[in-house]
Image (cartoon, rainbow, N blue to C red; front, top):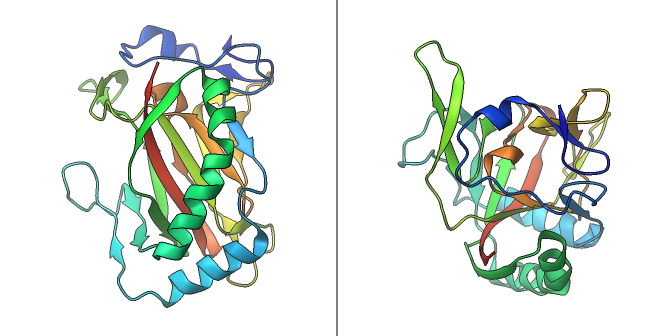
Length: 231
């Protein structure tokens, strides 16, 4: 392991792989990502979740290239109404300067907000937001090739909460977000349990490869966006 922030380490394999987009935040941060609490209120989250569940215009998320593979990703994409899109944007703008300072960059363009729903049994296996994984004939990772250069920063705003006992539309069990190559000083993989209203911000490169573990109960909902930036 090699240390990349005060409390987080990365697997040494990353140093042996070709990662053209490798970039890390200031190593003196406690964590190499931001977790911003209370970006949306619990009431905002409840209303968004309720409206999304009533939405009929939903489709299964595809992989890069446009094909659907439910063995890699089982996620539904919903629409976000204009009122809540403006609310999201106004709240994001409140934290823009703080985000730019943390990652030492200047945000430029952003993608449309994707509203991602995970019902029971839904998941998304390990992936990097800006690159595709390269593997040898035996299936071992040997590097990454950039496929989305405009993705410098990823943001995930959670609208429902992880709970040990997920009950109701606003809670779910399972569905943790796991950073595959990041761990604590004991070698334990960094695994986050999303809470409604909180926003996770991290660099899109392969150091921050991640997966969504299978939801075992309830409904996991997040608002996801990718951002280009001047670095």
